Length: 154
Image (tube, rainbow, N blue to C red; front, side, top):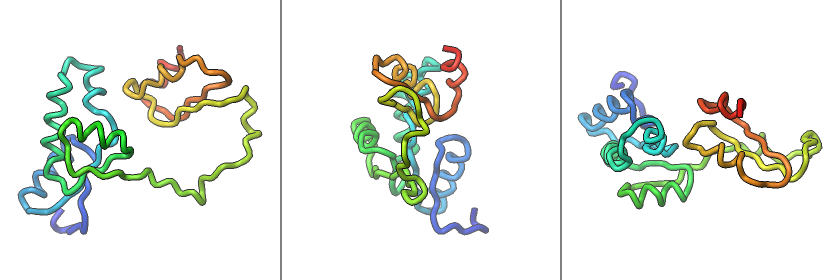
């Protein structure tokens, strides 16, 4: 990293690469930011018998020295604050509203109203719960992920 000499360092993962860059930044006294995009402890807990408190302790340790930990929503910010995280900031999704704007809806001919989930299709996103809701009209799932094949079979 030193030959590259970045102006800013952002860690997007708590995995091996994030751990290595975090250690480098701390050794060099370089500030960095992090982001927390998903409820990772809950994701892990659904797959392995690892206590949530242990996962959150690791994540607090990882994010604590960051100048700021960015989250996508105020509800995630509050959930992390309740778990002992600090220096949290809301980081918008950055949708270009000039390129992505409402258009006439006639291209969707299914029964109205239309309810839609848009995002990663994984067990921790509770897409199955969305599909099980007793809603009038039509439901769409837009996205992909490890749970997509199972949901399509269902």
